[in-house]
Length: 57
Image 1 (cartoon, rainbow, N blue to C red):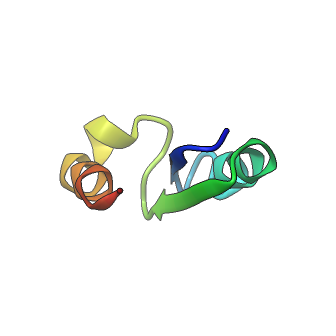
Image 2: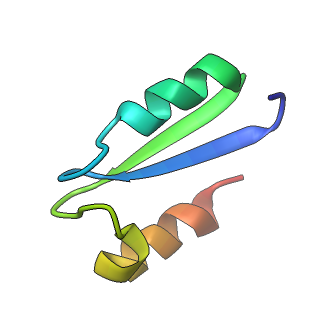
């Protein structure tokens, strides 16, 4: 993919795995890992998830 990609993972779930996978298929991949968060990042950390989305290009 030639577009920017943002992968958001929870520290207690996927951690950096999503970001590593995205870097294989995307030329511009960014990874955010939310501390003390599992699979449901938006439910568990709504502000942090929204902040990551809003600051992403």
